[in-house]
Length: 102
Image (cartoon, rainbow, N blue to C red; front, side, top):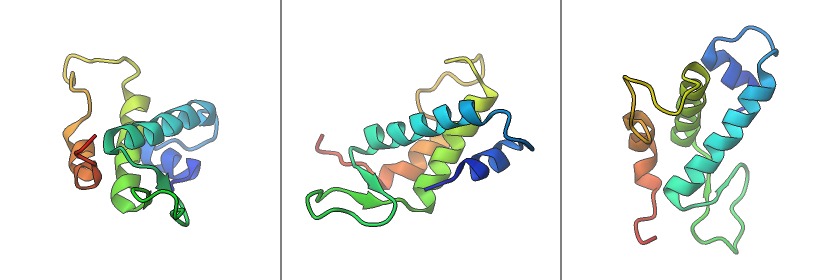
């Protein structure tokens, strides 16, 4: 799992004045990963009761960093340059973990 400090560093923010907003973006990014992959993600251990659960890894962390940075920089749902639902870098990182039978 990525920390708020890592999100700040990725967005090149030097203080904690934007932390409340970044926490919203990070929580939304975590939910987007769950929705896109169809899996629950865990920091330490996958419960036996969740056969499709996975541990967070660097690809998932990077996907969440890309999402949070994009939402921080572009505060509108769609811009003239980027009208895609999930940018290519994010989908490329998450596609190997996506459950296709959903």
